[in-house]
Amino acid sequence: MRKLLLILTCAATISSAQDNAAALQKLRSLAGDWEGTLEWTGARTGTGPVSASYYETGGGSAVVENLIMGGVPTMTSVYHLDGADLRMTHYCGAQNQPRLKASRIDLAEGELDFKFVDITNLKSPDAGHVVGVELRLLAADHFILSFAFLGAGKTSRERIDLKRVSAKPPAIGATPSARDNR
Image (cartoon, rainbow, N blue to C red; front, side, top):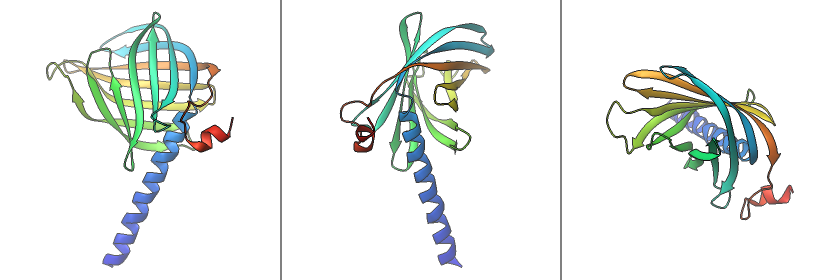
């Protein structure tokens, strides 16, 4: 019985590692420029235009997301593997850096959910910060990015709806499989 349990546990870990690696590969496909709109709901409200750029770095080991508002880069997130886990560090406009881990991956539906792990530079326990992120990959040229934000005990959600403007070729130093598909 113990051997069976160990084998099942290892199989679940391998599947999870494969899902995380596949999800990072899917995020690599976002390389390029995007435009869209943002909408805040909850404790914060507001709407506006937003643009974004995605590119690979670190020899293809990470995907960088830059969110630009009013022509100014305001937030950056970096997606990468940490062992078998898919992680995200968000360099927030609130001047802190939440670190999140993929908690649910359903690539068949194009859904990636990230949950809060810890944070650096939080000015106070009540200071606003991101506690969750959801990506909904609707099509090769359309996706929705949603940030759950907590501050002073109140929650807000920032929903960003993006459509592709242009694709970029893989970065120099990208993984061989990416370079071979040019």
